[in-house]
Image 1 (tube, rainbow, N blue to C red):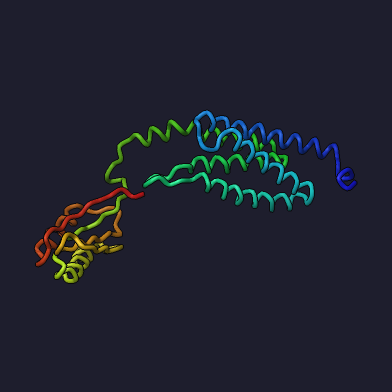
Image 2 (image 1 turned 90 degrees about the horizontal axis):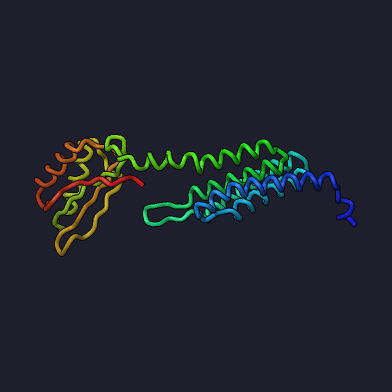
Length: 238
């Protein structure tokens, strides 16, 4: 009979209205994702919004606004774990970040609806949709632009190939010359190279260098006894 005593038509209608708004707005966000055939589509975003609304609405009904605020915090962290499952790493590329962020947006929309902040829920859903639609051509245009060398960051590594019998001496000489040129090494890797030689690679702290200075360092290294070859290269930062 406790369930019947807790049955309140006014509260039930309020919950129905809040959850319906979360369902509609979350579905709208998911519809755009489904149209683009993303991992989290129509049903996932609708469910995230509805569940968030139900949790917040229930907490508000049982414990008031203070209780609802605590539940919102748990919704944020819980959806963070859900979004992490949508993020994958393929080689050097990370995919699914936008999907995870969209799920977070759907949760925010649902939480607003559950807290009876329907205007805020509508505003939040419009901005989530705008981020996934209006900003897409802007991001694509930026991505198609060639990267300017002076504005990009790269990882610079100086390599030395030397005889194994001179490996320790060449290693010290490499560190010494880099420090003289104000390019201290962040990490040094050494491994065999062929039958009698070794390769030493020093990764620099610098994200931008003066090429002529590294050319001078490699030229001085090649003049070091036991050094077969010295060179440097740059690779884009991940």
